[in-house]
Length: 278
Image (spheres, rainbow, N blue to C red):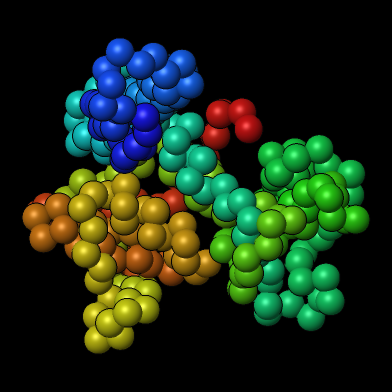
């Protein structure tokens, strides 16, 4: 008698002796052992499929809730739990783990505005830097983790995403403008947005296409997010009809003009009175 193991299947192939009356205990044991192994593998595969389905469901719900925050800005509302959920997710996207931001335009050998020590975590670091510097001065923070010998070190940076950045597992960096602005509520966006208004002039040219100052986006939220990544950007104009965004290096641009279908806002308005605790 001989047992042949195949790839995952619904059966087991066995070659038996010509005498069917011969009982081969070892063969029976082998068959039972492989049956048990097959059942364990099948159970493991079923559990993996169930876990994958659960994650897919969570991802679908998460995407739906994130999309709600942009929909609400256009005039609809949703419950407070969904708002908190979407806010937490958008803020999490501002926290860059394994990324080291550094200022590069300062004559400071420590490549930052100021350094604290013995901070508990990156959010403790963010709070300390926000207390020391106002909105115009502070762009980002950098926190050092264990097992680095500098663990607990907190650096306050002038540039929002660092003048330069590198991959380094000892660090977590946070763009302060991203943290404060992307979590603004739909009500906050509504109060800060000037409808049918174009902030003219003071355009920041497109880094990809230098022939234009506009960028193609799908919403005002995306337009604002782009602005938070540009150190000099302080206001935006967005055209829903053509899906274009203009980043500005002056609050309210050089002037305001009436323009149907255009919306404009200042980042400082969205960042003001931030009551969400870090």
